[in-house]
Length: 180
Image (cartoon, rainbow, N blue to C red; front, side, top):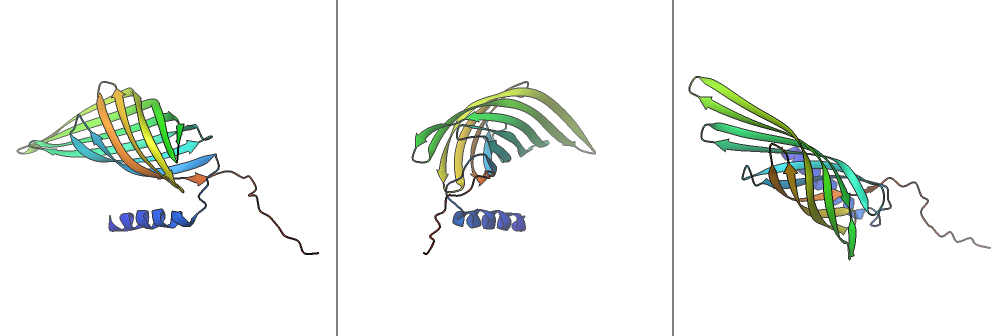
């Protein structure tokens, strides 16, 4: 775990010296903390978004939660595919509504004396929500709210960071001075 944290810190710090302006299309891997109101616990979220231009981005994300209960534990996994439409508010700030698809798996494990019982619920659903982001160089800090409409309804509150990498093959504007 310490190696993973070290890798993430070095990765984020090394991105500061890179080009500040990022031309679309871009790819944005990121990590975040997420709170589930139904489970009343914190979890982790990983995502990989692709931005076609300065307004549209989409991509997959996964979240994982684990909560100890008196009788055992509850684990919750969700996979999402979301689309954001970004409204530029100026100064690096943006607002985005989001929508998408969700697949969730909730597993409740009960440790009862000499045996273990496991109850598993699975559900497909729709995501709706909104968020704000703040761009600082290649880093994109964000907070968002998402509601999942399914048999496993839940409200999620997320705070995290993405790193923006340009996939553009445009030539950079450089000036060459020729001596005569």
